[in-house]
View 1 (cartoon, rainbow, N blue to C red):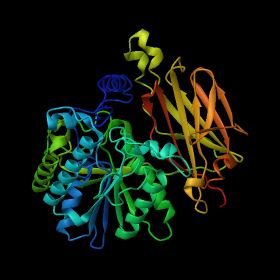
View 2 (view 1 turned 90 degrees about the horizontal axis):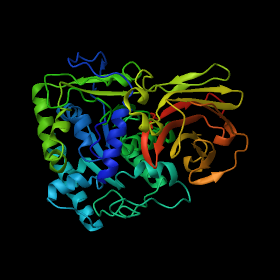
View 3 (view 1 turned 180 degrees about the vertical axis):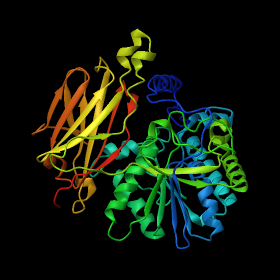
View 4 (view 1 turned 30 degrees about the vertical axis):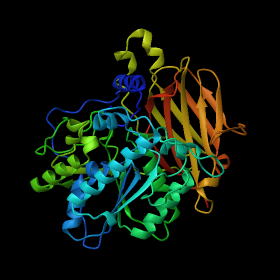
Amino acid sequence: MRNRRTFSWAVITVAVIAVAAILSFGPGVNDTPKGPTAAPLILGKTDRLLILAPHPDDEVLGCGGIIQKAVAMDLPVHVAFFTYGDFYEWSFIVYKKRLVLTPKGVEGMARVRHGEAIAADSSLGLSAEDLSFLGYPDFGTLDMWYRAWGQAPPVRGTLTKAAAVPYEDALRPGAPYKADEALADLTAILRKVLPTKVFVSHPADHHPDHRALYLFTRIALLNIDGELSPDVYPYLVHYTDFPAPEGRRPDLPLNPPAGLTGHVDWRTSALGPQETQRKSEALKLHKTQYETTPHYLDSFVRSNELFGDFPVVSLRTDAGAHPLLEASADSTPEAQAVEQEQAHLVGIVSRTVKLEGNCLVFSMDLTRPLAEEVESSVYLFGYRTDTPFSQMPKLHVKLGPITHTVHDGEKQVAWEGLAVTRSARHVDIRVPLERMGQPEKILTSAQTYAAEIPLHWAAWRILDVGVSK
């Protein structure tokens, strides 16, 4: 896994990278990439573009070429940044040549990244008025998604210690770090920009902020579906063996990673030599990031850009189990880890979902049984158009080696009809739809972890339940 914005603490960083290397399910990427077979992404004369970026520099990494094409066609383009990027401690150390320890110092670095984004996007043809900065907590937005809805308290920025947006030039300074607030901001931006095409981070991305932004965006779009229905094009940044080969190769195409090939409806946008050069120059203007990982950032300077999403899974009662994409079972920790470490390296091999009567049955196979200090979580969030999302149940089934509990947000709740059946490496979870608020759609994911360190996470998927409203 190449994730330049994971945990700041060195011991956790090393642990995550080591585990991710071991849990790199799925085949590698050919050393001699062929051009992508994806259909071309075409901009039309009446398009309006909204580009949603988790952090400053993601807009260039994923959409630097698309921005140039839109500007050349005189199309409206707006870029909104979910965070100021105030958690990437290593880049701050490289930039400042010293530790940045105080909340004030961290906020100062976030303002540097704000300025870098303005400069980089200006080089692509945008003005400062074309940019919005929301200011939610870097590396904390997925926590907001999990547990900061309704009456729940706000989360706090890990390094800033802030519980609300601390930046005076943000879209809404002082907005609490709560999920409802982030959803309201994204909804307001959608209604202001009125995009025909939305570019956003990918649900399979390994970085939690990237997954969170996708999820909040999907809920915002569902909420205003009657008034706005843009095409959505997720772009991928953090994923195993992606991009490959690493390094600046503008002559080579950007190909989908092997683990997602054939499972995502990919679109490609070709870049000419001048567009790749301008994209490269824009990346360098994100100086705090480029000085830290230039080889990695340069890997996105290719002859094309890629966009694609998982299809919505349509479930019908008693229609059988529907598989959800997971990593290949051919490469497991048993084949790669030393014996004494195997008990702690548990990955997700497969997931299936089906409807039986008025119940959802979620099934999951693991690479090996859960062991001491190793747990797994399954998330089932319901959605209805006639109920505010903050009021819908957000179930979290937490599985330990022996016991299991169910939570709604942070609150542990009674089982009330839920059932868990387990064998050594297999789990079945049966959930009455009424426990999820009789949803029209369900957003689901799963992960395994040891002492809060993630071992493996499954991409978020959207299920269309197919029941009456």
